[in-house]
Image (tube, rainbow over all chains, first blue to last red; front, side, top):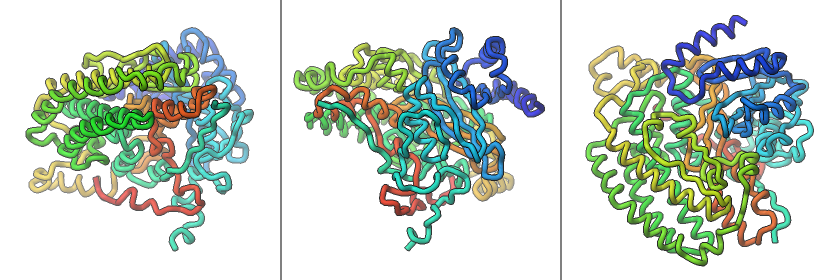
Amino acid sequence: MSKELENKGQTNVQAETTPSNSVTPSPLVAALRREKPDWAGEVIEAFGEVTVIVPRENILEICSYLKTAPGFEFNFLADLCAADRGPEEEPRFEVNYHLFSITKHHRLRLKVLLNDDDPHVQTVTGVWRTANWHERETFDLMGIIFDGHPDLRRILLPDDWEGHALRKDFPLRGFDARRSAS
Amino acid sequence: MVVKSTPDIGYLHTGMEKLFEYKKYQQGIVITDRMDYLNPLGNNLAYVMAAEKLLGLEIPERAQTIRVLMCELQRIASHLVWLGTHALDIGAMTVFFYAFREREKILNLIEAASGGRLTPSYFRIGGLMMDLPSGFERRVQQFLNDFPEALEEFHTLLSGNRIFQKRTQGIGYISAEDAIDWGLAGPCLRGSGVNIDIRRTNPYTGYEKYDFEVCVEQDGDVWARYMVRMREMKESHKIVVQALSRLQPGPVKADAPKVVLPDREAMKTHMDALIHHFLIVAEGFDVPEGEVYHPIEASKGELGVYMKSNGGPKPARVHFRGPSFVNLSALPQMAEGCMVADIVAIIGSLDIVLGEIDRCQVSVKTGYQTDTRHLTPDIHL
């Protein structure tokens, strides 16, 4: 909670100094709090951007809702990516959904937190088809498994590649550096 | 007839997103050059603006104007490569030479400003590498005077060409709903009648002050995407003219001595400038904790940078939302049902750059790792 307050304090300073690249976030958060209070538990507003940490079980439901609900209309999935906080952290992974509305021109980031021993989250390919390749990339490089994905294969690395290259415990030059050096 | 198509990518992997985590913020800029190598200044801009957002830096007016000017020149250059190669793919060879002749002029301008033709790294966190060289405005003006005529030439060669029309009109159709659903961006999205341009919807680096038209075509086919880009070059020309007239003398670096490298002259006379220079180069600068997603309108569409900082001089995670990557994913949708020969036309109309699609890894598909050290020489920015 204290972190949230800190970030909010930061927002006010940022609003004056950073170039404007997003709408004022407050109405969006207020609307979300009003419509779906149980989803908008943790909201972080920083750097002129809104992040909502949502429960893993609800992600599909939330995305379907936000895509069509009047006032939100997030019909465009701009980006989907994951970050690794490090093998010692718990929850270890965060999956970010960057939403954009073609009609309203506002943006929102949804965040799902996942544990190392169970990096599963439901796919959103049914909501936006563009999620297909984003999820494949995230699976390939970060090892997040998207349940229900129609074609969850590696996309950038070869099929017989071992490990997930963007994880923090994967060395920069790979496990097999000695062979490649020779 | 194409029954089903599956793009198979990953052959130009260079481990970039991993590398960012091992390099200081200012060293990351040189990596971005190599991503979408036809639009390096756009990549630079997205990256440095994400870092500036985290740092809360204010960029001086002159630097912002130069950023707009250079980015629009780069957009024209990128579209010219698309035009030449797209026409070449379909069988019209002449345009290629004329397009590259014009592009050469822009590369000369970029070289004059930054020293690099394809890898400028001209935008730095907090401003620019250095101010424009003397006589630059005159050279840009010369290019601007010549360009409309060249554009007319392209129209004469292609737009009025019956064969080109037959090869592109009604080919590779995608509706507005599908285009949004597939996450298409930039000219591909506008070619389907969706009026979206991030320069307009979420203006950055001062684009709100410029007068330009967002080019939209309704047909959603290869021809529509062609027309959007052709018209966009004209609009970019318009923006460059405005940027040139806005250019006022002033500083090109933010007043942030702990982030921005000091001028050479200051280093020779001021002790503190020398200390700051040493610290930035040797240790980097701390970026406050947080995460940002910064989208810009690159020549191919929405180029977004997700940057996460845990504090310290190196980012915890940098992810690029490459427009080429996303646009290519919609290829099966457009290709199915058309002739095999049309695939070339459709891929050309998507304007993909494989360097951006494959941003991420340390090897090609042989399983052996390639040495990536040459990609990011430890030069100090």
